[in-house]
Length: 565
Image (tube, rainbow, N blue to C red; front, side, top):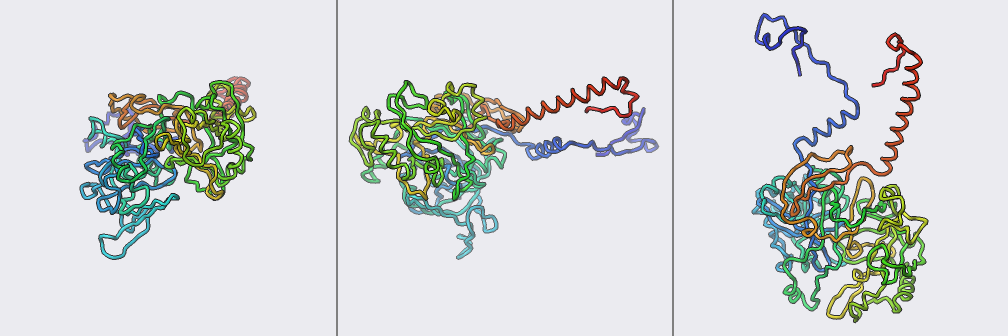
């Protein structure tokens, strides 16, 4: 930008004077440092955007957990299973054939009623492939998914406005502030469990570019590559397995509240204990980088009198499985929130049954067992020891014995590992009156790997910190309305978080937006390196620069004076 510059001249009086001798000189641009240029470019990208920590309640269906989204303009409600093992979000559209009907919570999405709906053409396919056969009506990007238990769905790719959570009174205002364009699968047919489940569709939440939270981040709707998923304990929806028709009559049209999904960070108000971190830097052959992996160091069984949580309520017998770490992690250990049950490879089968019988005085059930709740409660608690992030976990205190969720009590050689407890109330599910079904399967094929399903995640707020490659675990009740409140609907947007900040405190909007604490900043390794760098700079300054100035005396006449800027 040109500016008028002349010493001792009033420029305002000479701007319109044709006889003025005022000269025009361009201002010399100030040279910016690399750090300043990086921040300037980032601010340009984020100009006019705000970043929200968005939370919504999670509900439970028949073994699955789902959230509400609002899609289109005007918005239409759809419920989606939260699936950290999938990359694509999909739900039935108006022309879907055999897509559940009355089984689902909501009617199919009526795309023709949305003014912002766009069907992707062959030049804009994201996950699908081009299908330009027949006529213009069928031209577009086709996508299909098949799952291990046999369920399938087919869809075409589309794009529309979306936001997360049930809308409170301030509906329109919130929709405009938090919506973003989502690329999703508009389902045209499905089979298997997708037809009988309560939820309408599925929300892909892995690390792929097509997943729901990654699309939110790219549209600057959240400011950090972090989300958290909180599943409550002791929430069961009994399923009538006689016929599909009777099951539909028994199922409520709104499942019970069973957790919280938070996009862009986590909410400390949900936590009963500090967050402890396990490593997701798990180089496992034949395991995709888009999934969330952990490494299991050891598995234990603890006597039932030790309680349901990670820290035993009293001193009881804890027996480790005599299985090597390599065998425990054959095929990888994945966190899959969309899977109801937990699976381990058959390499632990015999040892697991042996130790189970020592503590329970009975064989581990392989089928439905006729028992009372009191008898089931006397089954041992399964403890999983995950390889931890030592530097991150040391922040919680100097003595790991005093930090719930750390492994110091069972493994003094690896005190900063993470312990996850799976009590019998989570791995034995009541199916019918006085019948309980085991939902922990220690006999999968090696090639399938192991899966920590929803029943292994219950009772925790799990923080998926993608950039720092770690997964946090904090004990929690995970009740949205009870913990976060129902009547505070303050909308107070804040600038998108920057890497230089540690925490961000915002206001609270529980039903759709929950402005709370966004965990930002640097990791343990980065903090240590930064402190060391500062110490070296200060040491150099006081040892050489200041000492040199004192020796040289009058530095104004010294041409070799060192200037510190």
